[in-house]
Image 1 (cartoon, rainbow, N blue to C red):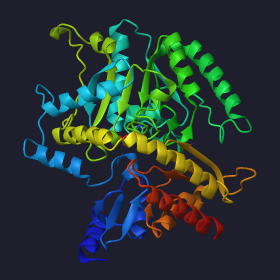
Image 2: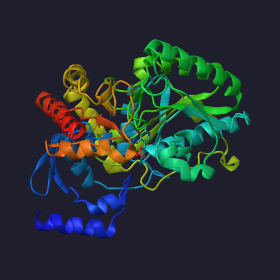
Image 3: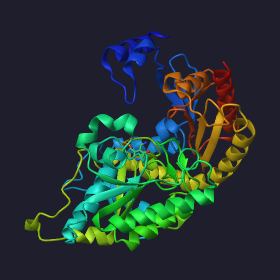
Image 4: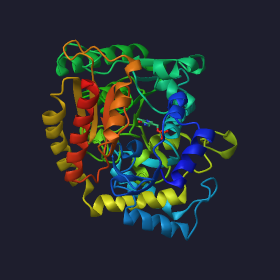
Length: 452
Ligand code: PMP
């Protein structure tokens, strides 16, 4: 290890506390120190190159050090790095909103910026809740969400996105949420066909929403893919049914496209595939091409209008973060939209997704310990099982997902698992030869670890 990397590793072990990490294991290991990047690759201190197989936690879109994004951020640095959105505005924030609104589902005409997926979700929940209060629908004080949903790590977000493993310690702090079981066949609706699972999930949603709809401020869903649950997919018909049921019972619909937005599912937003338009839409991650922290909550004009009143009524939306709508981040966001147009990114993604599907079927699905391969666009989950016939899971202590991701590094690919699910979520700029490497290295690592 070069002197700098050894020094960084030393300081890391002495001073840092990493997210979602058992630090006892971390401190016993040797950290991989990333010092630079190029295109779809990350480069470590020894100059080794790794394909960024999960887009730096699902956010990189056009690759690293893209000349158009780099130039846009540099140019913005020569103007101003940061000024506040509280009481001031700036061209980047306004232009980015004006360009995003036509790309968003119909009727979402207002953009409220923040700086993380979790904050975009908190904002959506609070707008929905306050709007109900302002409209005099004061009994609408609950939310509904899907079982094993993930909406971020702040308290409101973990209330709607509860996971027993991660959040059990905080349970007394969390508000009560109505849970709907999604049509996830592999674990939840064992033995059913996809159609039967979808019909059963819609029946359940109808019964619960009709019983409790009058109590609900909003229903929040990750459209098409419940990412952090382990890449659980649901068909567009399910999403369309949820949207219809939400309207029927008069509750607002929030779509959390923090993970699915900006092309990952094969369309610019996942909502498009179900032909739905929510009342609120949360985006983050890919909004800046994965360059800088920025998030946004889109709202309908009707919701926006609910908050218009004389100043002294104090019904404004009292929410804001210091770095909300940061100008450098907005510059990256605008440049990212330029690249989508110039490089015809969505056309490229459709070709990639088709080939990815073929390769997964050929090289991954037949492996002895692969229980399920799920994919929507470029979002892929490969669920490893101890026994294919019974779907018996590996014990958590086997750390099977982490071991596969450690093994795949030796083949020049960086992945990060979700439990026993190996996630592939490459940048949309992935080249076909890089796709070959991604799938063949993953297959090789799965073989090495599960056959050992
Ligand atoms: N919502 C969804 C659907 C997500 O996948 C994530 C992050 N993986 C978040 C919200 C939270 O985003 P952030 O980590 O930027 O707070």
